[in-house]
Length: 113
Length: 115
Image 1: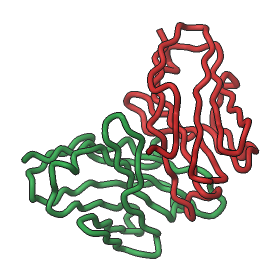
Image 2: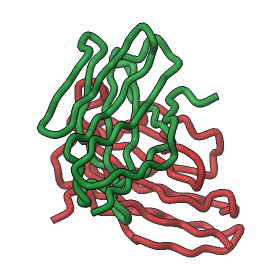
Image 3: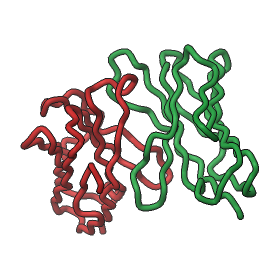
Image 4: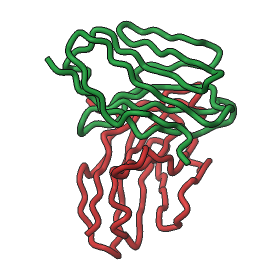
């Protein structure tokens, strides 16, 4: 059973819209949640991350909303641009003594001009 | 310039053969990792190393052997290759162990196809 689940395999939005990517997790010990962005032919790169003590983290056009009680989080990409077209991975880790990130299967975002 | 270099970018192998995937990082990091990305599966943690010492191994098969000849090198030797080993293998690094405190940086990957 997947510990980190991304509900949509793919998402298409128009340029200028807000893209919303959803993620849920199983393990209550997870307390660190990064989102990674991956372009074709490249490795994943950290986009933004949140810790479970917060319910929101904002960085420019990217915002994470976190709901600890429901064990879910979402990445909002405001004013989406065609250059945001990529695969987005939600990941999770228990920060205490953990050496691995558990990744979701990714959501492929396409932003249409 | 890429700071984590993986070689080769593409690799084709025959079933039963052995290959070595190369990884070097120039970020001055103390921890290095291997992850695997197969079709229809999430990125999967394989190994973590800290100061050239194996810290965690989540790979069930002994056919996968990491090798660290220098602090900034972590190669991956795969023996007796099977078609199921076909995947993109990503090397990653972080300043120190502990992904909650240290950002993980990934290389561009080696795409392995086993025929």
